[in-house]
Amino acid sequence: MHPHGDPDGPDGPGETPGDTSVSSLEQALHAARALVLADLVAHEVAEAEIVSLVEEAVAQRRWWVEQWPQGAGFVAGLVAQDVQDALLDRYGRWPLCPVCGSGDPHALEVEPELGPDPHWVCHQSGVKVAAVGSLGGRL
Image (cartoon, rainbow, N blue to C red; front, side, top):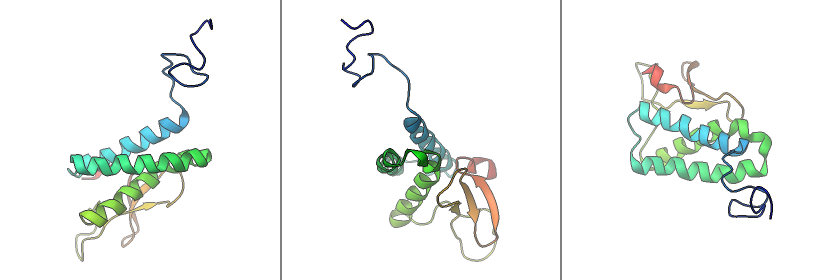
C-alpha cells in the first residue's frame, strides 16, 4: 500500500486523500470571483441571480485558463467584463460611472481588456476609478 494512500484515489490521479493544496489556476479563478463579487456588493446588486452570472463567467474562464495557463493573471479582468456583458444583456449598464455628474449615465469599462491589474475606467473623462474588486472604496 502507498504510504500516503492510493495515488489514484478519490482526490484524483497523483493526489493524496485530504490534499488541501489549491492550484494557481484555481487560486486565480477564486480571486477573480471574489473581486467581481466585491464590486457587485459595493453597488448592492449581488442578488442570487446575478451571483449565478459570476459563477457562469468563472466556469467559462476556467476552460480558457486551462488552455492558456499563462493567462491566469488576466482572468479577473475577463470575468469582470463577462459579468458586465451579461448584466447589460439582462439588466442594463453596470457599474455606472461615479465620476461624471452630467450627461447620460454610462458604465465604466475594464482596462486593460486583456492584461494584469485590471481597473474600472471612465472612458468619457479618462479617469481610472478603481481596481477591479475595489469599487466599494469609491462610492
